[in-house]
Image (cartoon, rainbow, N blue to C red):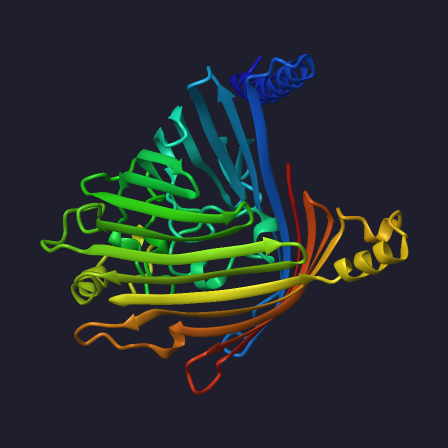
Length: 427
């Protein structure tokens, strides 16, 4: 038997072993759950979207379908005090490659091909120690609780097919770093305090400010300078919360090379809240951030290597964004009429079925202010009105449709209109 055949069979056996292992784990979880003694729990969600674009600056932009993300979040309870948490996200269908042997075109060599573009990301991998409601401890790879999406990122938590753009264009979503956290509840007040690894300023850009400073490009993460994170939420009700969150850390020391001799601290503050009671849903966020020595960073970043695969564009010394969205379940009107008329058993007005009609206003400027000779490009000041519907066939499944009208602050070719359809679920 040739070496090539042996290698091919080994690769096939490895794939089968992985599939059998995964299947065995889920069979074990299911069996344990039926027996009522299962320390495991698994949750997650998924999103699939379609978008058609009418953008003046990009008239040839083609319609797209995207398996935006699929998330699996297993947990394991060791005892009453300790549990393990994890969250694995497959973005854009994941990523994949295969190996084949081609003796005719590759001169008898093995060839590896990329079959699927995307990402597989570990968003959470942590141990949680629960001492009392007011004092708990988490250590590992954790979610950075800045903004509204960090807490409410499942498809039922926002109206549009994609996450709110005023937030997603300024900070990473979902933002996850490695560090430690104290958290707890003091009556209606919930708090979180973290020390995590910081951002890498080589990834900052005009369009997305610090978003791509989230360290995902290398196998290991530079942790020369930590960041400090805090969050306070006050719950008037389980479905009515207001809060504030903040982030502060140096981003110069975490660059791939020690190529700067100045500080580049980032400070961010967010005010957020939501009200979701009866037929009404209202959500909003105000986000502001500042970057130290943005002009010097912009000059240094212009000289970065092409191999680093970063934008190398000027960086704003501050960024500003806010949005508010409101929706109303129109089926609640018919439920009320049916209840008054004594017809409470009609399937089309089931409490599990919700039809939200919504509108949202976004404003965000990733170059809200600039330093030195950096040009304040009006292209990055954006305003968007979005209108649409969400049809919840079940509390765990939603179909979405929206039409957004984005306008740039430029005088010419400033229209970007998008029609989108989406499907989301959670389990």
